[in-house]
Length: 167
Image 1: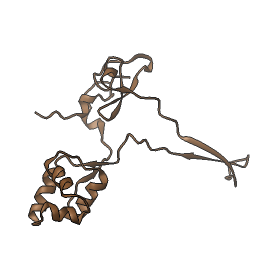
Image 2: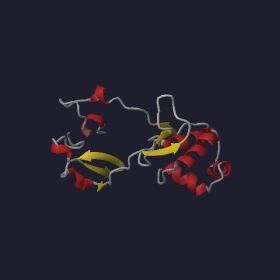
Image 3: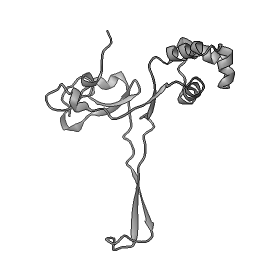
Image 4: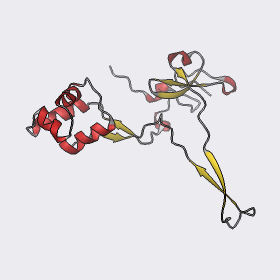
């Protein structure tokens, strides 16, 4: 296994799950100092209950597996230039900050801070802006195909394979 930040080979699967800037990564001990080491996530719960057995089940016990969704993995994400989109659409519709604020049941200062980029709206507030202004601020995070962008030789992705550096 390789460190997801520096690419160093980690022997005997001694990687550390570390939360760095909101992302949980498998890293070496040197790179773990850049974040907070995480506990091992719980395994999916298996519930054993008595009920009607399936045709191939002889004991009369039904096993159900419940998938747990990690709270660290967001499903929706705010677009990068949300503040510009909000301000331009509000001005295009001829609304003042106060009018937009009353439309979404918020204070005008909230609209102003969101437009200036001083406040990052949560998903609930972003949905209010979307509905009132008929814009898209929330994008779904889909599967990312690492094999297309893989640069390392051993097919283990590192952070450098994924990140696009702004210049």
